[in-house]
Picture 1 (cartoon, rainbow, N blue to C red):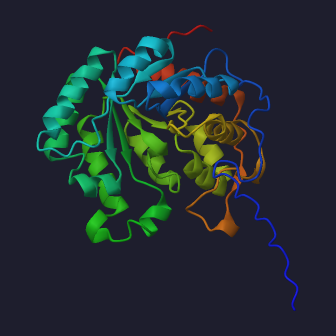
Picture 2 (picture 1 turned 135 degrees about the horizontal axis):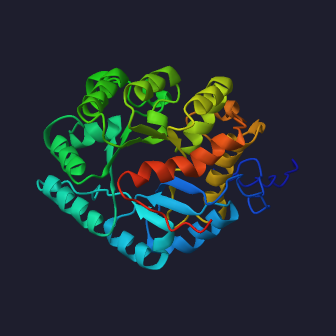
Picture 3 (picture 1 turned 90 degrees about the vertical axis):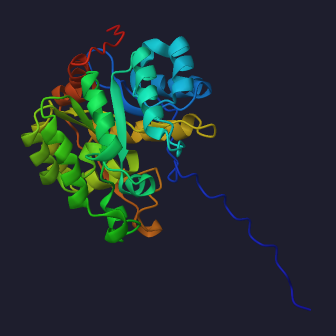
Length: 338
């Protein structure tokens, strides 16, 4: 009779947000910023997420937020946490009715009435294909004109990771090309060259910093936010020296955003992973494997983070001063205490 052996226990798979075992509750010095720190791009999706969201933010020294929060939740968040959050007007993304434009116009007015002075247009290739719209024509053009007339910041997500253009968006006949998407965007930028414009995710193309530099040089009111964690860690680290030079050269035109997204199942460690990565990437010369698993890369080729170690005076602008100056153009003031 052959002998049988008990199966070896299978080790649990590490969580997506910490596959190298970082202690996210370990203390971290506050950012080297005189005054408060502003995160200019988050998605605080529900009032019930606020306690753990702000607990995590406090641990990492982050004070104020500019958030894409659904209108019905924004009213509740403003009531209890209004001194810490400004809101970006967004539509109901699930609205596929024939009245979606009118509904979005009403939403913009409602957000405006609770103090919002920013409107976000999501023009990623997948969104444009699904909703059959473009930033520079048709009903969205009408919405853009309304935003400008109200004196609100234009904000958009144009472009996506290059890995996606080579993969999920490879069918150009269906999704279009990056060059076409950026021509679309410039049609709007050139129509409103003197209007404040916030471009998410370093203009949606950190893989091609010369392209983004040309946009900054051409459109003086354009400001980039540096949001998205896995994307920024992967692509800025991959061209660390060029990225550092880009941030220093454009230190007056970049505002920081984490792109943090709250959900019911994202607790302290998940939220902390994003703040930890952004701060390590911008503030330090840290070199090491990113703790967040990157699904756009093979498991055996996970990115190495290479911190930019930005000078203190640059961090002061990116974390605080640029946001204060930029948003003041449309009357946004933060309840600053330092």
